[in-house]
Image (spheres, rainbow, N blue to C red):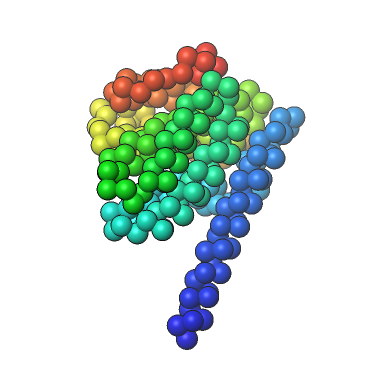
Length: 237
């Protein structure tokens, strides 16, 4: 009975990893389609949320495993996270690739030294905060590009992802932002939802969701003392 349970658990983990890998490959292929409106994934909203939320879920699991000194589990989830970040860095604009690769190198160094007593949990927190910060910028650019390509549902989903990763950058930095910035992030998320469901996206764009997201990103960056890449500013202006 115990052996069967172990086998079922192992199979579920294997299936989940295969599913995530399929999402990775699918996202790369579909992101190259520019000519017509396409969904970001031909899957339901819950699956899309699971995809962009993958770093958040893995990072929390990694931190918990590290504190328990379960370095095997932590290392496995770090490797999955690095795969995600690698694929997103390949899709990123040129100016974002160097800092994303630098962040990945930092996470890889941590992964290789997890059982070293000199590695503190603060190193994980800092690396994860930077990963979320860079992903927020990456998804904001993707939202802008989707808007320009008139792929409005994808633009809305990328706006959702932008707000999500900005929030996580703040949380992993153990910081606070003012109420106005929190409201701005809520507004970005709401407009992202409207773009996914509205048959009149131009009405949603009248509220300038990209500009609101850019302003929130700029303010949070100043608060966290994080660099905003100048090319990104130019692209989303």
